[in-house]
Length: 120
Image 1 (cartoon, rainbow, N blue to C red):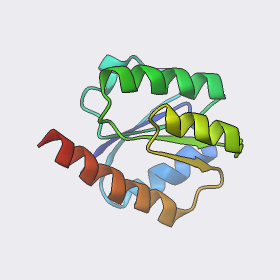
Image 2 (image 1 turned 180 degrees about the vertical axis):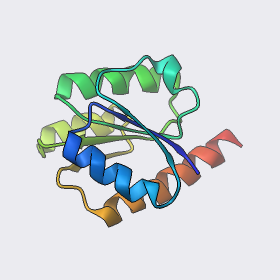
Image 3 (image 1 turned 90 degrees about the horizontal axis):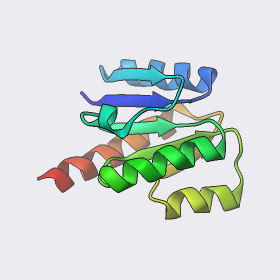
Image 4 (image 1 turned 45 degrees about the vertical axis):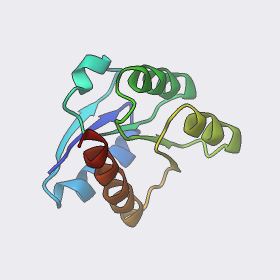
């Protein structure tokens, strides 16, 4: 079981992510506003959305303090330049809405082993 934090994720996408991950008994916290990096101390993965300025600000703060924390950007703006900016800033993945169930499962499967091996 993992602690998943959703930050400023579109409500429909957040519900879909929550429904997919609840089946696997993950603990999910949905934050409608930004979050202090200290509040992510025990998080296993972050899904962040909102405007590019919002998720990039959170991404930069998270990567400065917790570079090993998997960070997925979930957006309605599938722009190649924004995708590249997010990945270069340290995002684990960048996906556009609507997000597929299998895509969510794949992100969890690939991100969590990386975190556990980095911690070991």
